[in-house]
Image: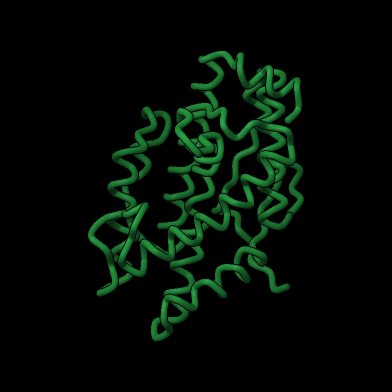
Amino acid sequence: IRQDLFERQITLPPALSKQLWQKIIISKIANQAACLENFQITHQLARYLPPNPPDEGNAARQYWKHYFRQFGRLAPDTRTRQGAEDPVNSMLNYGYAVLSAILHRSICAHGLNPALGIHHKYRFRSDPLVYDLFEPWRPVVDYCLWRFRKANKRTELTEWVKYAAKEFLSLRLKLPDNRKVKLFNAMDFYVQSVCNVIIDGQITRLFLPDISEFILEKE
């Protein structure tokens, strides 16, 4: 843990926490919209984005309704985070666990305390900062799972475990300087930008992922 970051995390102004969280949620909804648009799915998520107030709850309800519909007979009725018994939610949860573990490692490597969230509160054996910062990256998993299902309709969803590892390694994101970097490097850049915002209080230093600009490259 970096002492300067730790002190800033503890004393982070509520107004800056609110700004950070709002930017993160806007990025999440925008990426959910990009995920649906990539598969030519008509939606109305724009109504939950600026200039309208961001509305994570209503955006999620509409998003999952459209997203799950693409899985046909395997489509679950609702999003289940823990104890999912259907294959789609189970595979989503697996993908989220993999990417959030990478994010957790990056958070610790940059000297942030994962127990100090900007929105979620600490609970026993939880890392609220990981939950907070992971939100814009969830649609990455959604996107990859739908690509897998579309290309492998006769393949068991358990094969997703191998597919996900390969897919996560092949994804590229564009940084502000137009460099295209691997997904995991982009996550590092994102965490560093959060550190910069916490240290100097400038929200403009925040980098957020844009999955509409994904470039898939073969390793």
